[in-house]
Length: 113
Length: 114
Image 1 (cartoon, rainbow over the protein chains, first blue to last red):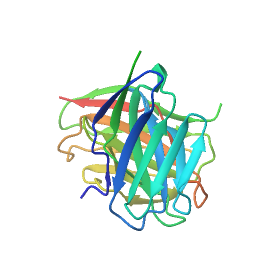
Image 2 (image 1 turned 180 degrees about the vertical axis):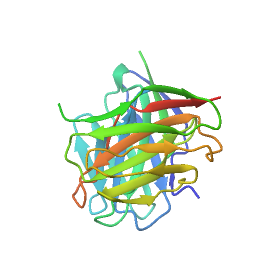
Image 3 (image 1 turned 90 degrees about the horizontal axis):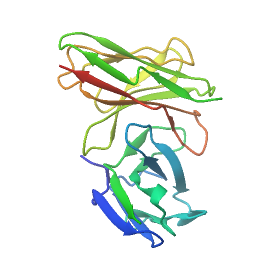
Image 4 (image 1 turned 135 degrees about the vertical axis):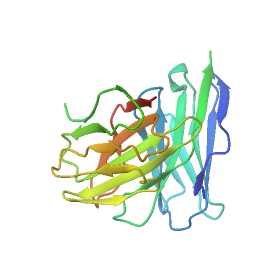
């Protein structure tokens, strides 16, 4: 049972435009959400996170939005750059002290120059 | 430089052989994790350890074993009982009981079993 879902396996966006990556979850016990970026044959790197007490968190070109009622979060990248081309994973964690993360299947983002 | 190292980057084994993947961290993190990644799938948790000499099974522990004798090290053994061992294996670590829950990942080991 996939508790964290990324329904779009791939996404192509023009350079300079906004990239929007989506993630849905089913477990209402999740209270912390993270986005990771991964290049081929490398480990994922942490990008941005959000706690369930917030509905938005911003860090430079990256913004994550959380809609708890819909169990949905999204990552916005503005403006998109060629170096953003990678696979993006959404991850979720449960109650404080439980660091176990559940990952989605990833979305491959391609930025078109 | 603090970080996580995994060795080797590529590993080839014959079917029926056990193989041990190395993971070392110098971040002073208490918690360590092992994931595998297969094409078209997310990262699936194999085992994790929140403290030395203690570890728990993740979602796909069958055919794997781990040990946590030192804080810095969390080796993973892929046994001959693992039916589909060919995959990309990732080790990670994190602060235990802290917030946020970011996990820091190593560069991964690609294991090919033929």
